[in-house]
Amino acid sequence: MQTDILLIAETIENELTPLSNELIAFARKLLPNKSGRLLMVIPGQAVQQVAEQAAEIFGIPVLGLEHDGLRYPNPPLLAAGLQPVMEEVSPSFTCLLHSTRGCQLATSLSVKNRASCITAIESISQEKEQTVFKRSLFNGKFVMTLAPQTAQAILTILPGAFSRIGNEEPPPGSGEAEVRKIDARSAGFSPKGLAEMEESDNALEEADVIVSAGRGIGKQENLDLIKNAVSIFSNAAMAGSRTVIDQGWLPYQRQVGETGKTVSPRLYIACGISGAHQHVVGMKNSQWIVAINTDPQAVIFSISDYGIVEDLKTFLPILVEKKKKMFDA
Amino acid sequence: MNILVCIKQVPDLESTLAIDPDAKWILEDDTLKFRINHFDAFALEEAIRIKESFPDVTIDALSVGPARVDDVLKHAISVGVHDGIHILTEEGGYMPPHMTATLIAEYAASKSYDLILAGVMAEDDMLYQVGPMTAALLDIPCATSVIKEQLNPENRTIAVDCEMEGGMTEQVELTLPALLTIQSGINHPRYPSLSNVLRANSQKRILIHTDTAEAPGQREKVLSLALPEKSSKGVMLDGTPEEKAEMLLKIFHEKSFLK
Image (cartoon, rainbow over all chains, first blue to last red; front, side):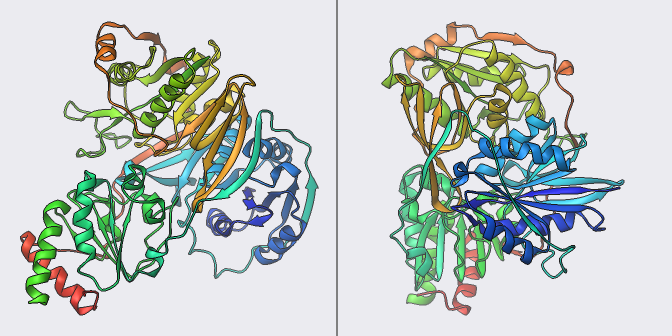
């Protein structure tokens, strides 16, 4: 049976976002026998060049969709512009990135095409001749397996989950690039521009050791425990998960995770951090990971080199005290 | 101006969770505690702040779920919402986003809400779907992951900052009626006030009965819920806290991390 796959890449100011590569890796996993067609759509304001490059690098056909309104991410405009392509290709799987905009576009395509919608996919497998998808729930404590029940399925893939597969394989076909101007409107949705959040603090980039606080910290005063733990290392800095930054306890520049910084220090100590994907994606490439958490089920332990089931509020003071006795005497 | 805030009741993620015998969802027994979805608490607070700036605003809160969901609607009234609307389902468990979005959209279409707010995602299923799907069903503009908003009632628009990946934000202007999904950190949700708690105790919620069997068919089938595969890369340190601290310090020392 022919399996046609549509990949929707993302651009910002006509540049492909780095995660767009992961769509290719995902599609190759989704199409193991290579008997279907792949088509990558690259939306933007002027994408001729980027479409040609992508077709050459990825070895698949690329369709650029151009509209002045696509200079900035514009999910409703793109959904309208994609609809004729959806009808033309009638893809079994339409794959997007699990990003803020990707998810919004996915739900909109799902409604327009009465298609199933599975978001934040982490892995694919075959069960009884059907393709099934796995995704995390409850901060990664459980994994749900879902199967689409409609002829078309809209999928969003979790950043990082498919980055390392398929790179070694040769491209499945030859690539040509075509660019179309689209005639669509996004009623009531007008992007005004993009801004980068201020970044002036490089402490996390420069540190060998990062001691990071999560929800388990409980209250602001307990940040002193993290600060004291930082002081036992030779080149360390304090960071936090989104919860801690949302509370205003640490500045945004110290946020690690999907919507904050991606760090890779020699040692990362996660204190009271459950290990939700949004955080893990920002620190999993650290050389050594130590996790301290009261919950033995916490997912953070599965990516840690050393795990300690303790309350950070009792354990960190003991650690600091022992350090003084063992090494500073 | 009328605002609808969609709130979900979720299991307390800090409590011990187990898989139910069907292996389709978590076990919802008498010991399981529920609370408001963290992200929806930010949406609720944002609605109340809008009302404080524009006094002619009325806020309704809506939740879909079994009888226990009444608690989050009561909470919504106790922090300042006008009415609580409970779309009552017979059972708890996993509800597909398309079904939830359809029930919300059907209700909202029968009213004239100028603005609909929801949390960016639910902490339990982490799908990020119900908000934008509801907007798509209602065919109204939608902005997701909103970290700032400014309502302009005169020209019926709302200007928002949407958080994107990697520290970027996008500024968007939406025409009302519109739906926003609210990201955490946009505000600090307040505690209930005494007068509103008293009102929440006496005021009835608006109950809407629904037959989920008649709701649209499931577009995705849940095959199983399981524990994640353990990647046995790591070592769990055992012993007293003191022993664990000593083991850890020796490792840190060997790798010359210590001062």
